[in-house]
Length: 286
Image 1 (tube, rainbow, N blue to C red):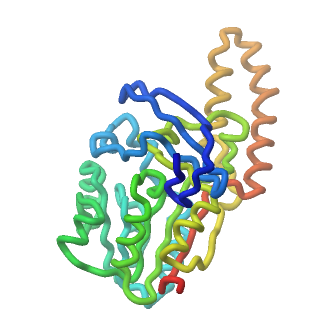
Image 2 (cartoon, rainbow, N blue to C red; image 1 turned 30 degrees about the vertical axis):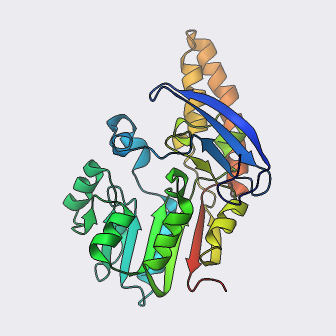
Image 3 (cartoon, rainbow, N blue to C red; image 1 turned 120 degrees about the horizontal axis):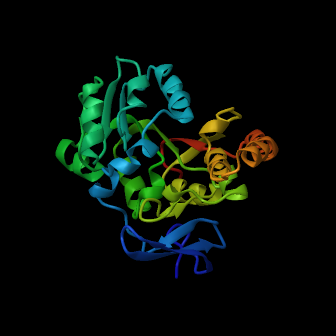
């Protein structure tokens, strides 16, 4: 078994699970060198998976990094063309100034239709390689958020991004945090399993992959926020407590458990254990 990122042969089995929807067993291995976790089989999900209405609301919405990146790009007069891969319903592209050419790609047809209705005409139901072959266009900036963990050919994907950027172009990306509170004190979310997520990235693994093509300018982590009631950990604990039949015991458990869970949540947020955002620039390191 070989790590798909650093090519090390020192990998250990970390988790095994059976996906009832796809009737398939997946095994995760963790690389001892770069600390990435990757699934076997290592194969991306198809269009039907991403158009599943049951999961739709979990994937699309606003993110902290959308604001961070859009503010940086709106202040940069040198960035006139922006491509977002995996644009979904257009939450990020909608934050960019109207004087910029905004192009979005996603193979979820339902999301593309919503993006177009929201005033984003240059969004396409196609992959990055399909867009490259059809339009042969380069951009000042390329972005993709929470996409890398879905890909079964990350090096090929980054190489295509590199070749589609203009000189001195920029690239922004984000991935789920490997330090998030749900993993430490609860259980891994359902969306963090194959075939949805093939990889679970560490900062070291990101650097190894990215620095094959780009120079890393900055890595940021989502700062402290108080969206506790939206957290997986909160909802899981409330669900357990609400299943208790005795009303007095149910209220007592809420008074005891939730403050403790909230304290854990805040302490971890203070440690910046949230989403990392990486900003990269060209040219490729020599």
